[in-house]
Length: 76
Image (cartoon, rainbow, N blue to C red):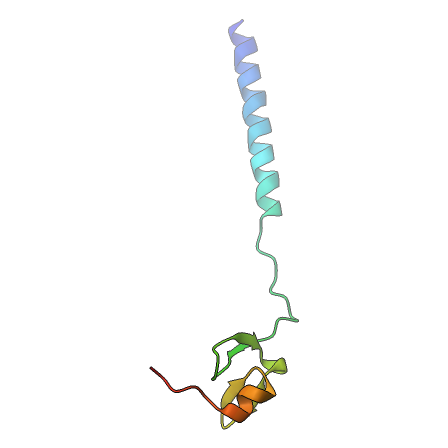
């Protein structure tokens, strides 16, 4: 009877370790998406958008033509 309990414990431990190892392989870090664009902040309204969609003027970024014409908002 004791041998049966030992074997059952060893099998249960083996299954537990196997499942833990199997799930740890799935949760490895995925590589960074090479298509991800750097984000910039609009100098007027503060919204963040991809740099390739932003408009720039004098090293400042804007989200739209209207905000580009209005210029940066004054700091409080």
